[in-house]
Image (cartoon, rainbow, N blue to C red):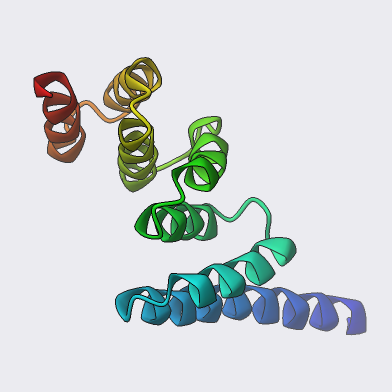
Length: 132
């Protein structure tokens, strides 16, 4: 019983740390302090390396900082997963487009549209890429 309670408490603390890191980093990003957002997110990602929200946030923070090579690192981690949401496809595609890696963006958008065929956001992003 003690082990169960300890495990539950540890899990709750980990989840709340990840959520608070996301909120803290988001507030830094809103003020344009991308370096501090990246510091907070890197610390959080050490505890939860597979957390999709943290990967999204890191990709966005580096994108906003215009460090597209680092943003690609996290966009690729998102793109390599099979269980990602529409926002992850959108963020990763935007990063690939910023790097002018059109083939990668094209493959990613097609993969996302296959998984989420009713996503207007992905159709819009894909159409924007084709138009440019």
